[in-house]
Length: 290
Image 1: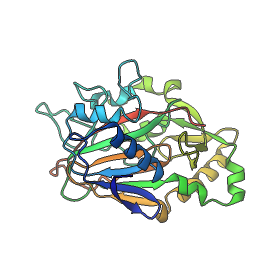
Image 2 (image 1 turned 90 degrees about the vertical axis):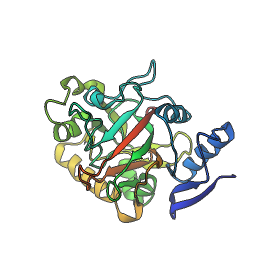
Image 3 (image 1 turned 180 degrees about the vertical axis):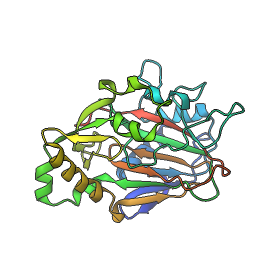
């Protein structure tokens, strides 16, 4: 591998150096990035990438089809107001407004532990986020390694959860994260609700990861409410142990690529509105979890 990189933690994530995705996006470079991404558990940082929205989309398609692509489903209707007006593949995150006072992007996006779009039958595979404008300090994103979280469980706990499935439902986050005028009621229901295994196997690496998250998981199939809550609360607490975490401090033009099959993340909203923030995200459609 010719890529220059350094690990972010001893066994999770990597930062790539000396790469210009616009000046050199050859098939061999893309293959190396994909191989490294899988090798390090699904988290890559590439700094100093000056990308147009079109550049971002074209690069992201190397990971798979995108939500919002022609003939592919969009993200849920509730977030349609945050989609780029010219690029339906781009979801915008921002604390700024336009000259009419309308939000440019979603201000409080992802301020809870979650895996992107886990409530769909075919949820998100990769998320690729470009920090075009970032505060001088604050607005970090924390990632949790769910492959290590699973491998750290006891044999007894693994034997309990390996055959279980849990429901993921957009309504879990929608009722607490979106104001009523913004929430599209049609998003509540079967099109944004899916049953997935609690332990999923990565389609490329074959490694197992925990696949539940407080943002969207509602309950475990076949358990009563009390049983489900007790087990899920244990898993949620376990999932974010300090040794599983990496906290990314954003710099302008950072490009982050994470695998929603193997990670959870949490966006820290500790910056003020007078500190502008504007980011664009492409979201890759994945396979049905198994």
